[in-house]
Amino acid sequence: MTGQEPMMRVDGLEAGYGEVTVLWGVDMEIERGAVTAILGPNGAGKTTLMRCISGLSRPKKGRITFDGADVTTLSPHHRVKLGIVLVPEGRRLFPDMTVHENLLMGAHSSAEARAKMYENLEMVYNLFPVLKARRRQLAGTMSGGEQQMLAIARGLMARPKLLLLDEPSAGLAPKIVLQIFDLVKLLNKEYGITIALTEQHVENALRMADAAYVMENGRVTLSGSGKELLSNPKVKESYLGL
Amino acid sequence: MVWEILAQILLNGFFTGSIYGLMALGLMLIWGVLRIINIAHGALVILGAYAAFWLFRLYGLNPFYSLPLVLLIGFLLGLSIHYSLVKPILKAPELSSLLVFFGLSLVIVNLMLIYWTANVRGLPILYPSYNVGSVTVIGDRLLASVTAIVTTALLMVFLQFTHLGRSIRATVQDDEAASLMGVNVNRIYAITMGIGVLLASLGGALIALTTPFTPYTSDIYALYAFAVVVIGGLGNPLGTLLGGIIIGEAENFTVAYYSPGMAPAVAFILLVLVLALRPRGLLSRRR
Image (tube, rainbow over all chains, first blue to last red):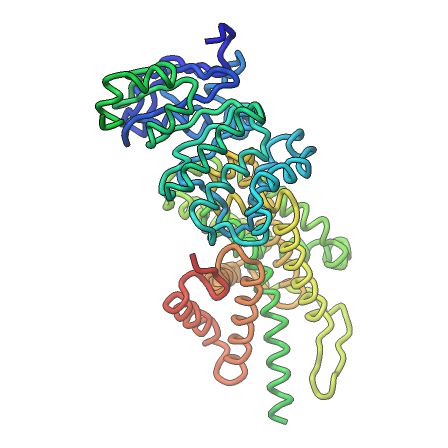
């Protein structure tokens, strides 16, 4: 779109679990400074793609490059240092730690994140006053919406360049879902963080996204700008119920 | 008179129990972090006991002064066990780790038998005892018990308030999420093995100070440590200390009022009771 090199490029990615192949040659580009939405039904391979990008899963074939460097075989903890931060599906908080401790864990990633820990804590607590009020509460005892806020806040503590959100609105009340979308917009526009997210709320996601990919059965079947896909007849029929 | 005997038994039980708690801490830590039940824990404890014993016998080193050396040896031994035996089987089924550690236990115990014989060893009494009323406080046991409690407290502070400690707890709760926070999980596993064996050697040194031992005593300490960890639950050193004290008291009361031979049986009756009533341990949090 801008003509410059994308922040992340995924080439011919094949991945799966044991003998089962889930991704069959996925190509994708994540533009710097953009919000990229990855859409599709359950089982399309969205979470596997997120796991490969963050390093939790090793692809069988293909290449992942970030800022021009090949990161395909790097461990998750190395990718976090580069600024690739995943807020995983199901939030994956540390349930027996307090809100505050979960945030401190987020700052574990790099020397830079550790040096700016208190600055980031203040930023995050300003962004989420509810977390500040509950800083001594165990993460496992909070409501779903609060847990998702904490999961995102914990991701921000690592000072991400590319923030990956896997199903951030799953299982949340409609009002909270809207808050999460507003937050994503804010993080992108005000804080300049590049964001890629997977979503089931297709219409909301497409309205917000600069670019979008639709995945089915482990392949990318459609891609384009959010606006283009909103008016695409196939998307309308399959996902928007129009 | 009855009360004085009772007080004496309670005190003895507390002393032995706190040492049992410390001895089991390493087992608890490795179990919680790596999800491996280290059956060689008892052998490693006795190895620590021998280390303290030989340093005293050969060089005249007071076991409290030789502790730094014993701890260093324990830590390095833990690291080498990790890189040679544990790392290759981390992703293998659980049975593999049981077999590996069973083998390690056999090797350690038999090497000790070959080189150091099955003679009963122990350290002479080093510190004076004194009387409080009619209750006798044995100096060596008091010091060993204080060391055990201080170490447990230090471990809690380490896990609670340091960056490394927090990373260890995070790995216990969700290793994948920890790696997403930038934690090098393999490094955490190695350090945990190091600390686990270090704590086993410390437990052994304190046992050398308070109780006679042979290479064969490994088995009973492995079983006691297992019972203590199940009673205390995973993830909380305070629970392990409590578990140790419960086993120590049970042992001393059984010895005093029933028969010494029955003490291990009582430990296992307690184990079964806890498994039946609070399977995640006495101090476990509900999920």
